[in-house]
Amino acid sequence: MSDTPATITAWPALLDRETLAAYLSVSATTLNQLRNSGRLGPREHEFGKRCPRWSRVEVDQWIAAGCPNRAQWVAQRVKAIGGAA
Image 1 (cartoon, helix red, strand yellow):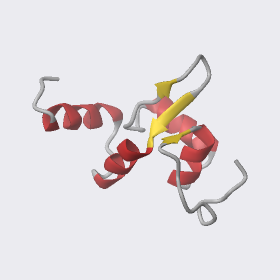
Image 2 (cartoon, one colour; image 1 turned 60 degrees about the vertical axis):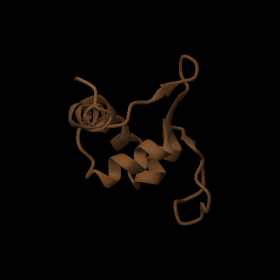
Image 3 (spheres, helix red, strand yellow; image 1 turned 180 degrees about the horizontal axis):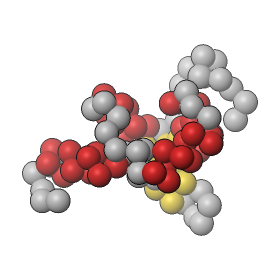
């Protein structure tokens, strides 16, 4: 995607890898490092073997929560819906 965050006025509901990196203002390499290390809280949804997408709403909630790592994020979400981890 060639657009920069400043030129995008309407973000899609589901973000692909490049769009998520732009949304977070990080490089694709940094995004992959965050994913692989467990520091990116929201999990991707797979639409095919090589077609991950992230929910923009969940990404926004994760940012509002202070960008906790994946384990903390999952625990917070489970607690919020009243379930057990």
